[in-house]
Image 1 (cartoon, rainbow, N blue to C red):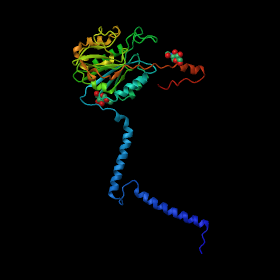
Image 2 (tube, rainbow, N blue to C red):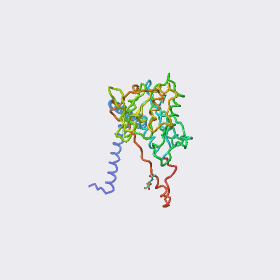
Image 3 (spheres, protein in one colour):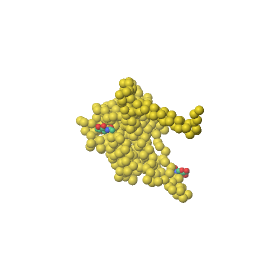
Image 4 (cartoon, rainbow, N blue to C red):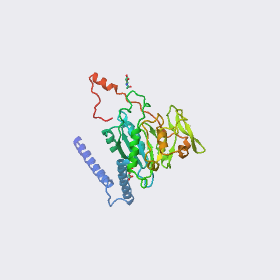
Amino acid sequence: MAHFSGRDLIYVLMLCSAVWFLIMFVQLESCRGGINDHQPSSLVTYRKALAAKEKEIKYLREHADSLNRRQHVVGLPTIYIITPTYTRPVQKAELTRLSTVFHSISNVHWIVVEDSDVKSNLVVDFLKDCELNTTHLLSVTPPDVKLREKDPNWLKPRGVLQRNTGLAWLRSNLNADFNHGVVYFADDDNTYSVKLFAEMRDTKKVSVWPVGLVGKLRYESPLIEAGKVIGWHTYWFRNERPFAMDMAGFAVNLHVILENSLAKFDINAKRGFQESVFLQALGITLEDLEPKASMCTKVLVWHTRTEPANLSNEEKMEMKGYKKSDSHVEV
Ligand SMILES: *[C@@H]1O[C@H](CO)[C@@H](O)[C@H](O)[C@H]1NC(C)=O
Ligand SMILES: *[C@@H]1O[C@H](CO)[C@@H](O)[C@H](O)[C@H]1NC(C)=O
């Protein structure tokens, strides 16, 4: 009678598993990768399709960001957005919020005007990275008109000289024969719906719409009767201001701006009168205004204000012997 020792049994088991491995390996090889003659043709087709899909997924992963962005559309009027900005802890967050919206609209040219006599690294790098058509300008507000830290923000008009610098750039770089579009003043602390830009795109002269959370009201708005602007839903200087609306509440056709080359904002204008000063200088009347946003019944822009950052613990960190935040980290 044959006698199997434990060791023999192990040898047999090893041999069996080796054979099993070999069989599996051959099967696996024939299933894998490249096209081979023994495969049924449907399998070949399937593998080819799979390989193509895999390539596509890889491409989509790599290009996901740029695919989200709208492309330049030939013949579509450009929206020239003029944004005054100034250095402060929340600046990059504000610019980021704006650029995210601008990425979702086609044919936009963003003119960013810094209140400074030198271009800040933060804004230079931000605009380089943001993959929009941008122009970076400077216009420093002289100290005698600038707000001091503790002044209420209505004391002196903000962004006035910066908007004028933006207008001057349009007039010296664009030509009514070649450039068509609309100009919008977008402060960096407001919140804009993508839909707002579709509303303003076909502005003939000046288009208008409501602005949310402004003038200590839920919203301010042009008053409409029979499709025409007849007055203003506002509290401040309701009857004194010819155009009693916020800077965020209107857009102007580029040609109107180019044809009236002297029209600009006035640093000495009375509080709340900037919009009126500018539109009057453009020769605009109530009759010219084009109500948008479903006859001024929809709010597509909000006068939000970001709370100033409180960084008082940075100093306290030092007092406690902790390291302050790394100044090389851009915030
Ligand atoms: C920027 O503008 C140019 C010319 O108007 C256009 O060809 C280009 O596609 C635009 N780029 C983006 C990212 O919109
Ligand atoms: C920041 O917060 C501290 C208390 O945490 C407060 O004493 C200080 O006044 C605040 N600073 C500003 C500028 O609001």
